[in-house]
Every structure is written in structure tokens, then in C-alpha cells.
Length: 463
Ligand SMILES: [Zn+2]
Image (cartoon, rainbow, N blue to C red):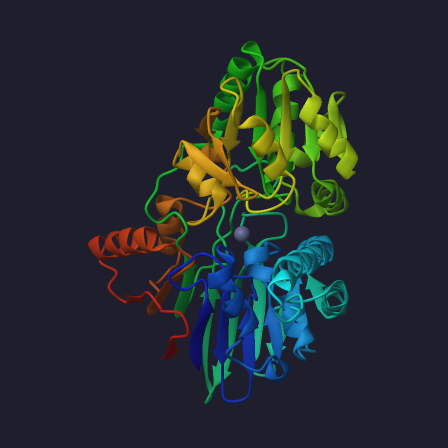
């Protein structure tokens, strides 16, 4: 058996790992590389394998850095099953067409600029049609149901506790009469996140492929999140400012809405307008409603016995561009939740451009911000930032709440590893930036684990 790391190797985007046996090639995840266009464009377009030859794709969860290049795979001739949980399938049903729309708009924008220079027309990475075609290949199942990604491979999903439907995957690979077990964590969540259940570990693995997003950090406890959020909201409300929350439409937005709702119901923050300015968030929230079997007990109980966890009086879901622009002239305290989560595109950009110069306002960062993104520059509290190519002085306050993180911290990652009855014979550290990889590797060494690798992009290992 051979494993090759085609993405999320020494980085956090483009998750793509290939498992190769005598008879078959199976791809784990097919994410988009994200960040600076000139760096990622080629990586997304030049796949170093033939998609038509894959026996299947096994998808850990719906986030675009794990699923976003699936339509391109289809465009290049991939026509085999995509195994995912039913909730991941539903979420991809809205996220992949949305991603196609972004790709098409992006190509349109570039062509407009390049046309002036007489350059050749650029085609989008993939189109809505490619996305729709790939959705037809999904074969959804629930946690703990066995499925067969290839004739000699059996697999099962278990809850990764990261976003709705997220899974860690165990693959049992039969070769030359012996069975080897590979566990891929996908993105690992943490205990007590709102709405979703806790991560559920596997008990055995010969080979572990583990994410390391926060291998260098310890998060604030989830329990403190409501208190911190309430303190920030009350403070900004009193000074008459706006609260901008860049958030991923899927997962983070629902968690924030759910938490705001709890704070209002418990009288801990004033009732004032909350705008969810993202059509995708509205659709994603509908998917949450339709997949309640993935909720934890608390969310299920709230929904069944108390109130609608994703809606309240002063909350408005905005879909049209006109209404979104109208918010520019809304001059009372309010909360605006909008994408994209790393401030790379989407409506959050015009809200930032409009509000970042006012010291009464706050930009509240609640998710991971990759290197090279506007979100990262905000976290670093740069005094000047570029939005739509224009320089803006940043006078708005920046606050970060890490406790919402959908990724476990270094202790969560290590506890997951310790949960195996026997230590895995080989551990691969993926999905982490270099500081995080190094710090987590040091943690492993100091705890007696020396059998790990930090694979480079494109590197293969025979197992
Ligand atoms: Zn994720």
C-alpha cells in the first residue's frame, strides 16, 4: 500500500491524500488550495494523477478546503462514487454550486482585466454544470455504516465533531492476505461545541493521518465563549458601534446564531438587530434543519421543546445584493454576520470597507485565518489594510474569540492519539502550517512518539 500527500501537506488547504493498493486508487478528500491566486491557481488546475482512474473518493466533510475541487475532478473524467455522510452530501449540495459560482465570477473578473492587455480568455476552474454533475456521484451513508471504497478496502465513518456531518475515516485495506488499518482524522473538532456532537475516536490504527491545525495552541474553554461574546457585544452596543463577524457560512455561522439566540433568551445581551448577510448561510441553516439526526442532545432538545435555535425576532437573513448594500446606511448598533470566513471574498468585504475606519466598531474574528488572507492581517492588527485594491486605515477594534474553533487544540489532538488502544505504527502529520507542525512534532517526541512523518507536498510512503 502506498500513500501520497497531494494537498494539506505542510499547509492547511487543498486536502488530498491518495491511498494506492495493488488493485485500486482511492482519494481521501479533494479540497481547493486557497490563498494567493498566483500561488494556488496552478496547484488547483494541475492534478498530479488521472481522476478517471480513481476507484472512488472518500470525503471527510463539506468544507471547501476538503471538498472544493471535486467538480474539477468530475470535469477531468472522474465518474466513480463519492462516499460521504448524508449531512456532508446535503451541505455539498449547496456549497459546490456556490463554489462554482465563485469560480465563474472570478474568471469573468480576470478576463475583464486581462482583455485590456490582449490576453487569452481564461476558463473558470469549473462551472455550475461540473458541480451539478459531481453531486450525482455522491453515495451518502451514516456514521458506523460500513462501505466499500474499492474491492479490497472496507471503510467506516465516525463523528469528527468538527462541523455537521464531519467524519474521521477508518479504512481496512486487505493486501497479500493481511489487513492494515488506516485512520484519517479529517478535521477534528472538540468537545462541547454548540449543535454538533463530540468527536468519537477509533480504538485501533496501524497508520494514522492526523490534522494539526492548532498543534501549537491551547484554546480557551468552550464554556467561556458565551461570557466572552456577551462582554464584547455589550461593550460595543454601549458605544453605539457595529459588530462585524466574518464567518464561514457553514458551521460557524450557525454556531454563532445559536449562541446569540441563547444569550438573548437568557437576557444577557440587549435585543438589537442581527443581519445574516449571506444567501449561502440561509441555505446552510436549512440543511441543518433537515439533518437534525446529526444534532447533539442539547440542540435537539432546544429545538423540540423551547424555541427555534436559528431564528429570533430581530434577526434578518439577507439574500439580495440591494438589501446587503442598504446596510451601509444603517447607523444604529447591529451585528452583521457575513462571509467569507477569512475575508477573501464575498459580502464581508464591502462591510469591512464601509466600517473599518470607525473606532466604535469591532471586527470579531471567530475562525482560523490562513497566512496570506485579509482575515490574518486583521488578526495581526495591521494599521492599514487593502480591500478591493484600496488602502484603508484600520480604526475599528479587532477581537478574537478562539473558543469557537471547530478544530481541537494540541491537547485535543494528543488526547485523540492517546485514545488508541495501541499507538499507531506510523503517524503522518498533515493540515498544519509549519509552526504548528513543528510544535506538535515536538510534543509527540517529548511524549515518546518518534514514528511520525511530516510529508511534503507530493511525497509518497510505502507502507
Ligand atoms: Zn474543516
